[in-house]
Structure formats: C-alpha cells, structure tokens
Length: 268
Image (tube, rainbow, N blue to C red; front, side):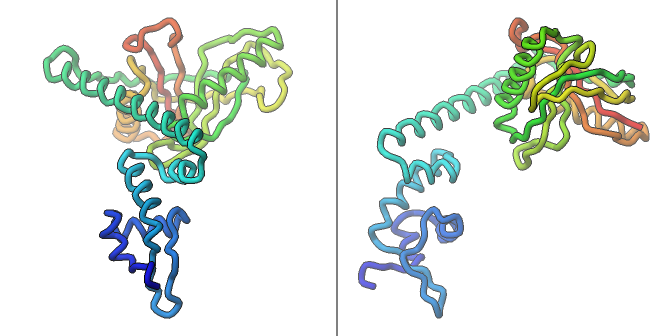
C-alpha cells in the first residue's frame, strides 16, 4: 500500500481530473492498481503517473481515445506513424477553420453575401441506377463516397457501360458530428447491367421533391438543408423519403467556388 495513492491524490499529481480518471477506468485506458472491495475507493500506483501524463498530453492535442489506446500499446516506430496521422488531421482541421475565417471576413467586408436558396418542386423521374450502400461517420464521408464511386466506375467500365446521368447520393440516415449512418452512392445507367456484389442494379421510384441548388464547397451545404426543411414545413408538406444530393459538375475540373449540388427532399 506504500506505493499506492487514492484517486484524489493521483489526480493532483497527474493533473487529470477525478472525472477523467473514472472515465479512463471505464474505458479500460487507465485502470486503478487496486479498488477496495468494501469502500470502492480507487488506488493508483505511483508508477502509473508516466502513462497518465502521456494520456493527458495526447488528450490536450485532441487525439481520440481509441487512438491514444493504440499509441500506448505501439512500438516507438508505430507511435511515430500514429502521431504523424494525427498531425495531418490537425492540419486539415486548421485549413478548414482558415477557410471559414476567410469566408466570414469576406461577408463582413461585403465581398460576399449569404446565399439565398430558391426552392422549387421537382419531379424526380424513375431511373435505373448502379449503386453501393455504405455505413460512415461524418469525418469519413468524403473517403467513403470516393471509394464507392470508384467501385461503381470500375464495375461499369468492366461491363462496357457509361453513366447516363449525374451521380447522386441518398442519405438514409442523418450523419453529423454525433451520428453515423448509411448512404447510398448511385450512378444512373441507361439499362440494366449484370454486376457483381456489392454493386446493386435497380430502379429508383418516381418522386416529387422540394429541391434547391447549392453553389460552393460541399462542407458548406448545411444551409441548403435548413432552407429545404423550413420551406417544407411552412408550405404544409411532409417529408416522404431520404434526401439526395446530385452532383451537377465534376469536382476534378471545377473550382470549389463553382461546384453545383442539387439537394432534393421527397415530399407529399
């Protein structure tokens, strides 16, 4: 017991709150060396302070818990790779915030105005599509969509077929910072074609939808969804299916500011 200290003392030593230490215990990231069976008091060994300091520093750098777990178990060479990957993530996040600051500055200076979305009611015809369905979180959406389109293009190329319309996504679930979910990645084709799993070939239903077009970066598309849901509610309609995004021009050859995405939400 001479080398053990209560959780409060260990918290003061390591600058990790008691709440954080309890969480790390629950997550099996930093277990107490001893838990008194009768009182439930948690005791930590002095030798655990080094691990606690590593956790504290990595959390201060916004590294996710699961990645910290990998770092603590990794070899020195693997630790470098994990840290490099997190550095790249932080750089991407910094670039995203730099872009947002630049946009806000242009709005303040009157160089840009907030986009006003025009809502129209559109008939989305039935289409034969090749599609793949994927589960993703918000951070992984871009990579998931790119992978899915790659699978579809490869399958169509192998079958000697070409797209017969603009590609689109169907969002079967709400995907945001707190929720992951399913998306369906679709390419219209003129007629049915044989395709190997996981590519599915089928026909979408004809639907009536409230639609609008977003111009600009995809990570700034949220106001288009807000404009649609507001319009649908104000005009007494009901949502009748998952929304879809149709990509009207090619991001490989189009400047980000000129990208056009139609957002359509089925209604009744």
